[in-house]
Image 1 (spheres, rainbow, N blue to C red):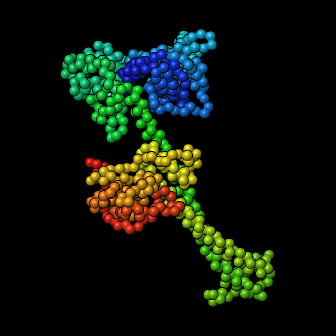
Image 2 (spheres, rainbow, N blue to C red):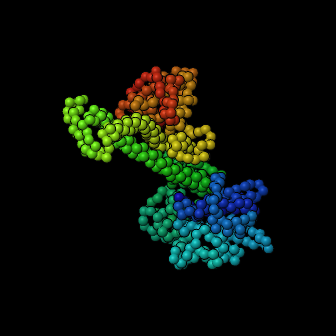
Image 3 (cartoon, rainbow, N blue to C red):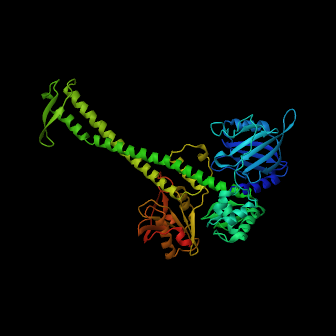
Length: 563
């Protein structure tokens, strides 16, 4: 990403204009390497996010407040003590460096004093450092000790030393022209990157393209000078924007980059672009982590239930011979006059099979007690079989619900989709969360497409499936793949009747968004939504239906109908 010195030269100017003379009202620390300053200047209240997280270091205004941890970190307590209620005097960047400085006027019990927050945006070594008016480090979010870097220490009480300059040229050094003129390769952008500091690779490539139209071998000093001018002119162009590819933000830019293909989305400020970009990036990352967490919970529940069913099956096999125990008790009773206490076995005629059988006896029991022991075994196994029948039925129903819920993850793409799945897992008693219990009615969006003037909605999870058929009108058509897990599909007909062609196309969607999507032909049932009824205790999205017809179709996705 172009998260380079160019980027922060504009961010610093932007923040200075917005935050100068603002008072720091509150300080948050939602992450061990991230702080948020709540600033107010009489007109506006802003949240300034400063992050030293190695994977995404940055500084910009944000609209997404975050909560403080339960136990306040020492760095947060230090900031509150020394700059809480302080006034921002100015914000500036160090030329051609990814360093932003915030000057703050603070007031303690005795006098006014100045502090600086120095934000170093340097990847793994990114840091947030508070220094006093004598340039002594007061505290830092990351302590750099001798074993980490013996050349540059960041520790409280030590003088702050700036980031050592790279042994490279700066963008405004005319030597770049001579070096480019002498360069004989095909990639001048990569060569510039090796000899110059201050710009990201994508920014340098953009400067080359703006200067000579494409990345190629240079023709003489004029083109070398054109690139040099472009490297410096780019600092004067400010049209903040985001570029999208396939519906997702690719990156943020100080101005539209002609060398980057995508949909340009212009904004008023670079802060706004960065906030949207990182919110989207973090949402997808966090969403992925949350999906994995819920899938793990559900997978574990499925494994437990399958193990229970295996145990129930083994127990059932053990109890299937209960009738033999009853017959043995009956045969002992019929031959009780022949049995003496202390005998270990007795051979008797089984009048059910007309064969002799050997029956084991307990030498410590009387013949009558031995008969009663076999009757007890019989009754215990018989009762166990009855209980197992109910337990197996319940476990099988639960397994169907769990496996049905697992299908919801495939189409989960937004936080509201995730909340639907959380709600279902809560209903399945796999999550215990008061927030989910008290959550308002679901508002996630269906997967939708318009075909021949008819809106067709597709449920992305079981909670949506339940909402779908409940929201359907009298003439709306409900569709579902036959004999497999899949999404509920509704053709919104209004006062009209759905045409056969629309029903076939909706059936193709129902086939695609099901477990049968890989088949060449799929059977899909359809009926009026009024004939769809929920199964009592079946879980969200589980229904019975009647008056259906069946159509056989080839699966198609919504993209097939949007092209």
